[in-house]
Length: 507
Image 1 (cartoon, helix red, strand yellow):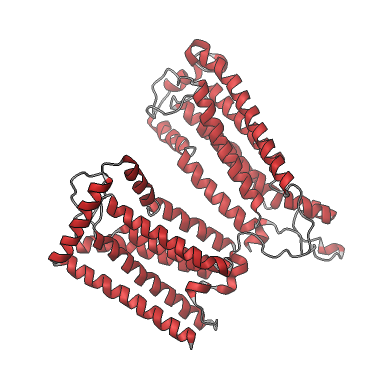
Image 2 (cartoon, rainbow, N blue to C red):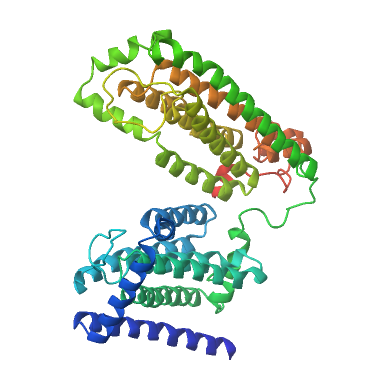
């Protein structure tokens, strides 16, 4: 009875949201004077409050970006990868369909309604296209709500209500930021929210009907999530060990302190090595001496530039920039957590990439080497030439991928990953030198940075420690980590506690 009542209340709520959106569309289209008066009053009042303060403008801009396509798109993509690896195909379909619905509804309705954006006294931001409904408000509500409904079963019950409150606050702040920046009216934001409630409600109802056809019990999505039975699969790591396990080393307080201290020492020593190599290079003939071809090679590349090579090298340069490396890191982190279900690989990834970034920025600021004295094809850069951040980041991210994958699979495609880990840094390095961005010794500095830092992080964090533990428990598993024993020898299956290979985890 209580379930039926809750279902009825949800239907009433979703229907009410759809009705509110319809009323707002009509009011905006006929330019209802009371609504326009309130909209313009709120827009002008917030503009007078926010525009004089650079801090408030930056704060509202940061909040607004939480509802941008870049942030939401990556959240949905990473969550979808996790769900697919965990074989939660229905939840992945719900997440993608719900998010894509928002992408369709926003531009179509903007064109259909055709409302112009606010005109304020002191513009502090610019919004493209029409105003109604607010795309940030609509899509942030849809995406964050869909993510909560999908992953709510993974949380303990006591954390579910705080999560709902926190997500609601984030969505509310995103909507407010669009008002404060003067790019939307109040009715635009409310219209986006009301349409989002109706759309998410429709998608959730369709999912519940899908469950009903399969004979699954009725759920309460706001308290249990869409698929309570998937709680174990949605956990980021294993909630219940398969067998009693000996605690891993270096997880107690002293162990953590030792790891942090070791990483600090490794960072300082790596930084010192980079600076010791870089300062003489930067001082010798103003950074453009001919050590290891630092003068000859950039000039040779500059004299052999063609349109075709220009297109190839711009791609090679872009795959090593911050945005591309961040995207690759997010995908690798999601795959590692979904397939391996251990935090160590993710901590290893994050440590390597943040360490690389800080080492690059710090050494570049101290060394201050000039770029090669040839035509720069990519324009002025905010950092100096030594070391190459593009090359260092590319080496680090693909080295991490190889370190995490190679011990966990015997499949043929692992050698493809090895080839990528070698060829990608070469492509980026040649592209950066071709475009006049770096000397050969800048590339050498990047190799030094990546080699020292990745080695230190691997030795201290031991990202594949779970495999080492399994070998200690079952020495025969060293022959093929995580695989079953050879049935031809009459042996039984590997212990249940053995870690699965990537193929088994994906299956």
